Length: 255
Image 1 (spheres, rainbow, N blue to C red):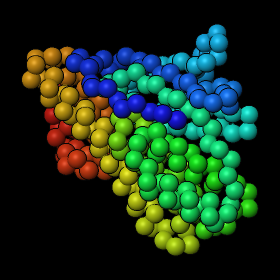
Image 2 (image 1 turned 120 degrees about the vertical axis):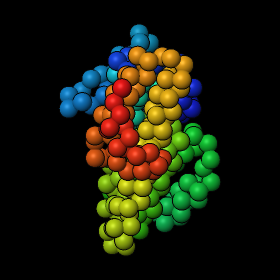
Image 3 (image 1 turned 60 degrees about the vertical axis):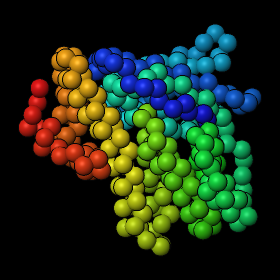
Image 4 (image 1 turned 120 degrees about the horizontal axis):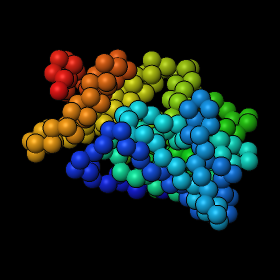
């Protein structure tokens, strides 16, 4: 899967706008469908040649669960969309089959440490996910696979405005660490979430101030409303703390 870097924020974002999402793929193993999971499936539309799927999401600062469906697996991706998000283009592929051998797990770990590009991190992340799902793996192998899946997902969530942590990456990482140090794993998950959410908070706060400085009061008011909603959400408190922004400033100074 290849993710381009998010483009620069638009000058006058519309908090009520929708963000285009396009999914394509490489290789011969095409997904049978792509959809957002809002409790019910909201499918993206394939083109006539079935070489891509397209859809939209509302520009709201929350996570959106995107499922890429194959014959034998539903691969989740969590998208974080805000009024500053530019059109999203994803290129997906199936992680190659793997086994539970210790040498395979060690190679996965080495490849994870060496991964520097977005495409490479995504590839290794999906390999870790697939290895974790192989039946009969030892706890040691599953722990490596879960760590790679979570760590690379975390890297991408912190470095891309539109990508977030999947629930299974968080859960598998914590569950695999139970025998070693579950509290430490839970703390690592929380820290990653806070840093990723902090990116969103900082982007919105900076944009609000830039709009105010350029006398775009109405657009600034829309961004302030988004920030106010996040400041009221206790799950986002750590995101504000991560970028050293006092939630009370937002809560007590609505526009």
